[in-house]
Length: 282
Image (tube, rainbow, N blue to C red; front, side):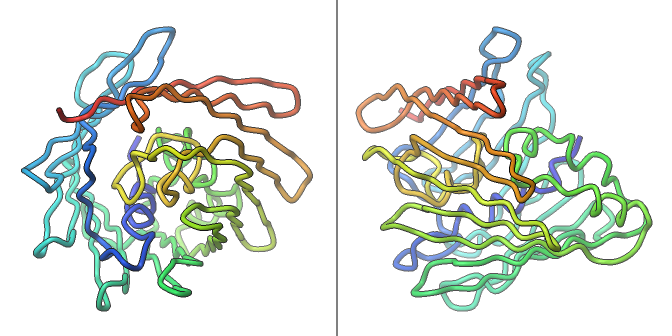
């Protein structure tokens, strides 16, 4: 199940503060391993491999067996990321205009363009992203919404209309992400897909450091968690048809760095709990 929408997370993750170059990631606390609770057991999900101050590779593992799923290797032009090459042949390229993104493109193993992202900036912050999803007529679109990332980040899922369009082998599906901020944290995310609108409001943050701020990959609930400097405590998701989900987050810290986060989601009285654990390079 290819994580086709992984590049969106990558692109957003590098792109928050204008005072820092887009595509540059060198945190003081470097992630080493990420675990999740799977079938009542703590399972390794990712391992991050560093070359001094640059992230060299991320390895992804099957939660049920612990075997390697696939890996992503990062290339740089100076200190900026230029390409991410996946072990299954898929790859992402990054183009810049000065210190800001110009375009981010994602290709399949046949070098067919699958996704292109275009960015709008306001006062050096990304305030909107347009995603163009291309069909090649031989798409593996049925796996889009089955991927691990889209399971954890429901905002990335494609609609049934999009899936039918891809199955039909033609056209481009457009999705728009609009962001609002309070200080260094995202306060609102609006997702527009044709006539459908979904909103995510982030009501409260703590004052500790978010380990995914300006990073590369995330296993959490929302895109704000890679765009916000602090850790979200409360989030409300509303869909156009009136459905509402309340998300509450609790953390365990080592200093200011979280080592464990629990997300509790209440949607129409149905409660789900998801636990994630972080280890850092010592």
